[in-house]
Image (cartoon, rainbow, N blue to C red; front, side):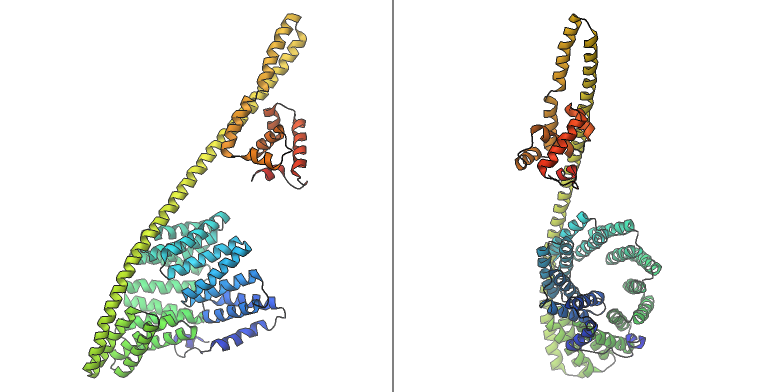
Length: 571
């Protein structure tokens, strides 16, 4: 396609699913192996689900069809992921969840934490689009915890932003802003301009919803600058389009239109049909608002053609209504009624009550302009019935949103309480670790000092007369008794058991041939003490400790490549 097509001079070609499959099949004919064909189809779907979701979905379906004959669980997981992403891009969120829950089950079977987290993330995002915010948070928090444990910064940042979207949907904008700012901090830690640009974009969207337009424009400007630095012209075009949206909200229609047109030209140069449709729709609606009806109709028709070619039928109802408004404004009443009826059909298909009552009101106005009072009154009556139904549905939605917000807040508070308890526990464990380490060092130093005294007394004993020697032998016995006392070890063991409950009992039960001395050495090794420190603490020679370690390794059946301390650490 050329730029003229994307700017609206010519509609894009329309092809059915079968034709798409035929076109996509050409991509895999070069591969003889079925696995290579499947990988090629999945790669195509993952590369194109944003720009050409219908094509991507067809490619993923073909991959899953081939996988029915070659059941590779990992490839099936990725194919389901691609199907879910494409369905999401087409606005088919319930269908996306169908694929993603299959992916989740497959990932659980494989035991792949990364795929599990990816499935939970996407499930959360789709629940957010369906306005099921507590469920969305449930899955997103689960993904967040996994990514935190994995120290996966890009995925962690992305999930923080997803939680921000949920909180934004639940109308908790200040909390949403907190999560988006946390995402920005992570992107700065990564020091990746494209990640920082995405974070600035998300913050700007929330600030726009909070009517903080000047701050929103600043963040969009930062986003645009960063996109330009990394050469991401497509991302820059999105930022430009969003700047136009902020100007439109401020009533700066001329500036908004200029930014929209600049963005549309850029999308045309990338041949991105999806964003071209979206931007043409915005231009058309803005032109309707400013009274430029004929130019508005041109853009709205183009946007509708693009949306239909992409399978984005959820967009079409609003566009058809806009077209009907345009024709009514220029006096082409019969054409206006034709499009208003199409808009009504779309409203019925998607149960869009707002579009339904707006279209009935427009039909009433059109028949009034045509002089048919009876038809005008009939649509006006339907308008009132639809509006009342929409009002009741909106009231129920608001009540559900309030409930969802309450549940969301409860989930957040529970998570915060859990986080604080974990932090307290970690601090407590660190304190006890320090305490037991200090005790170990103290006992080591004490035994070392007593050992030196014992040696000096032995030397003096050899050099003294009989009466002095007898007294020294008595004192030497007391020193030896202190040196070999079990009291110090019991103090150590009591503190050690607080940090590592049941370690010694579990070890002795699993390896029954270990002697009490060997169990003590295992406990000291778990504290990361060196052989010399263990020897001093147990009042034995270094060689004696090394021999004990050798026997312990044999009893635990460790190979020469396995480290004894590493083996004991998780026990």
